[in-house]
Image (tube, rainbow, N blue to C red; front, side, top):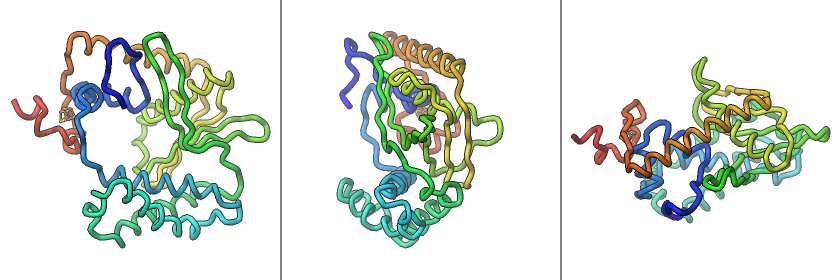
Amino acid sequence: MLPYVSNQPLRLSPSRVSEFENCPQLYKYRVIDQLPQPPSLDAERGTLVHTVLHDLFENAPADRTPQSAIELLPSRWQAQMAEKPELMEMVTNEKEWFDRAESLLRTYFTLEDPQSFEATHRELHLENDFSDEIYLHGYVDRLDVAPTGEVRIVDYKTGKAPKPGWEEKALFQLRVYALLYFKTHNVLPRLLQLIYLGDGKVVKSTPTLTDLAATEKVLKRVASDIFASIEKDYWPPKPSRLCDWCFFKSICPAHTS
Ligand code: SF4
């Protein structure tokens, strides 16, 4: 991604929005300053499992089995390491690494039967010129269009489902995708589905036009806050439990001053 240039539209995505909402200072490090970060093993495991679930649908329905998914792991991991050779040193116990990925894939098959449907789109890029100043986009793990025309948007998570009461926050990402799909296809998706492979839970929601209008409002408010931060060069750190996983903790003013 190019560094932010003030006369270009602001690139907004669900992950950028939550990053700014969680901590403006972190957003600055990542998006404005574009400071490099080493790969995280959790994120890389997520990428590996996502790749396998993506490629599984290349198989004929009868061959979409737990075993065929597990057999994809070594070759997809090789390809991932070829792109990021530093991963080779980070994964010291390959058996343990594959066992964990295998367990996540086995959990997937307890939640869905990929032999029973076709995945219409995988890794679908949705985008929209939201306004003269905002370009909104996102990558959808899977978008299924049923023979009836009904649309289901699916996102895989390798972590655990949110605690009761936090589902709405988790659904924001999929509501942004629903909004993007609605703006580009004029079709309101029927179902949003978050599949949590970490604990085998599924969070579902049927979006309404009211939900999409509320999502649009949040996006505009966050964009306006980001523009204000850029203008004032004001990026307050927001310490939270996330700090323990933040690569920039050693240079963050909340922890160094
Ligand atoms: S250490 Fe915490 S407060 Fe500082 S940038 Fe990271 S998340 Fe934000």
